[in-house]
Length: 336
Image 1 (cartoon, helix red, strand yellow):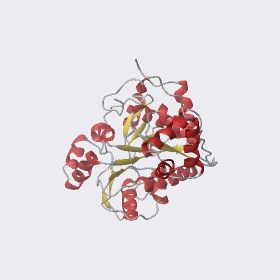
Image 2 (cartoon, rainbow, N blue to C red; image 1 turned 60 degrees about the horizontal axis):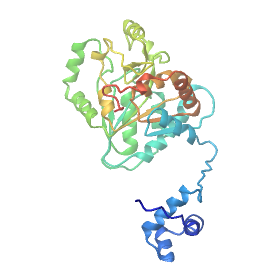
Image 3 (cartoon, helix red, strand yellow; image 1 turned 180 degrees about the vertical axis):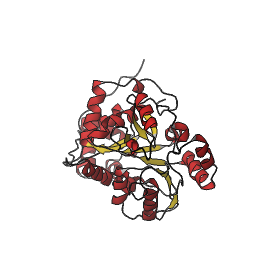
Image 4 (cartoon, rainbow, N blue to C red; image 1 turned 180 degrees about the horizontal axis):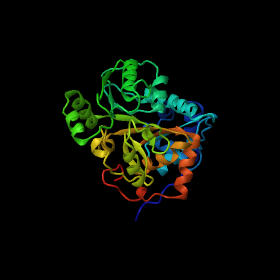
C-alpha cells in the first residue's frame, strides 16, 4: 500500500517563506540557519505556493500590456510578444513608436557571432533609427530582399542593412539585385552573380530575422507599375493575397499564394523563414491587422512586436473567425 502523505508543516512553510520573500535571505542562508538542506528549502518554497501560503502578484507599471502579450503568445503560439504602448495618431507616428520598442528588443536579444537577416519597410526603418551604437563581436547583418522602391528612401533594404551594420560595427551582407525582375531568365542570370550568391546562401544560416509585414492593399509601392507590373497585382488579387513578407505572398488564412511572381523574386523564401530559429515580425497600425493575421496563421513568426490597438484587434479577429491553419499542421510551418 502507498504510504499516506504527511500533513504539511505549515509553520516551516511559513517560516521559510518569510525568510525568503520578506527578509531577502538566499536559499542557502535559510538552509544554514534552519539546519536543513538547500533542496528542501526549494521544495518548501514551492509547496508554500501550492498551499497558497505565498501568493505572488505583479503590479506592472502603467503602459505595460502583459496580459495582451500573454494572450497573443497563447493564441498564436509565439515564443514572445512585445506590445508597445503607443499614443493614437497618424500611422507614421505609430510606426515610429513600434520601431523604438523594437530597437530595445533588438539590443536586449543581440548575441555575439549572430547572423541576422533584415527586411525592409517604414517600421524597420524606425527601428534602425532608434538603435543606439552597440559594440558587438562577429555580427553579420544580411539583406533578405532585393531592392524595392526608390533607392533614396530610408526604408530601402540595402540602406537599412548598411546603417544597422554601421551602428553595430558589424559586417553587412548586401543583395545587389532588384527584389522583382522582369523575367525568370533574368533572375537566373542574377543568381549566378557571386555577390548575389553570397547573400542568398546566408538565408540558410540565419540565427534571427527582423521582418516587416506588407499589406497588399495598403502598400503604395505594390500598386506602383514601376515596381510591380499591373498584371501581377491583378494576379495577386485574384489569388486572394492579402499580405507578404519579403514579397512572398499569403492569403487571409495563412496559405501561401503562388503566382508568376514567385520565379521572378529575389528574397528569402517561406521555407527558409520556417527554418530560421527566431523570426521577429515588427508591424502595427489598423492597415496591417489583416496582413498580420495572415502571417500569424501561416506560422511565419515566433516573435511579434506590435502596438496595443493592433494586438487587441488581432485577438478579436481571431476570436470571431478561428483559423483552421492554427489547428491543422501545414507542411513546412512552425507547427509540428
